[in-house]
Image 1: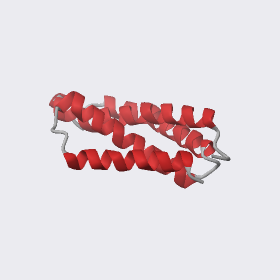
Image 2: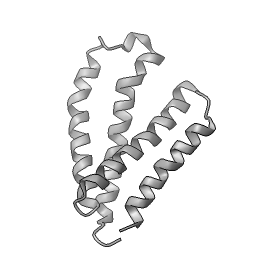
Image 3: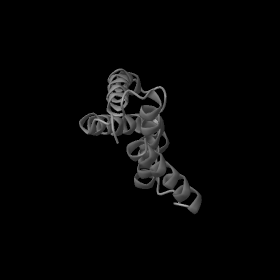
Image 4: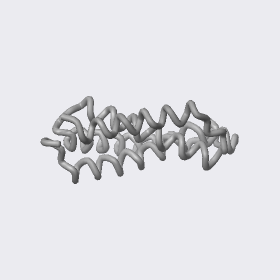
Amino acid sequence: MDGIKWNYVLVGALLTILAQLGAWFQHNFQFKYPKYDETWWGWYLLALPLTYVFVKATKYNVQGYGDSIWAGRFVGFAIGIFIYALMIQIFFKEPFTSKIAIQLLLCFSILTVQAFLK
């Protein structure tokens, strides 16, 4: 666990969660409420601050994991999958299958490897 800056990891994770939530709404809200499809101007306004949050999240994740770009990317990916799974359940009630459970377990494994293996 040498080289991990836990304060950066925490800020990076929180920013990643915020950014992934915004991206989820930007991409999937149209399926719940069709009037907010790709023609709704609000999604394009959201893109600017959302990009900023993603860039800052990436910066904190990379710095938190000892300047490892790979670690930052894997963490961002895994958090994004967890957020996606949660939001799909909340808004669409899609079935939670064993296949999805295994994939989430793999994402959790990615987070564990990044945090605790050298």
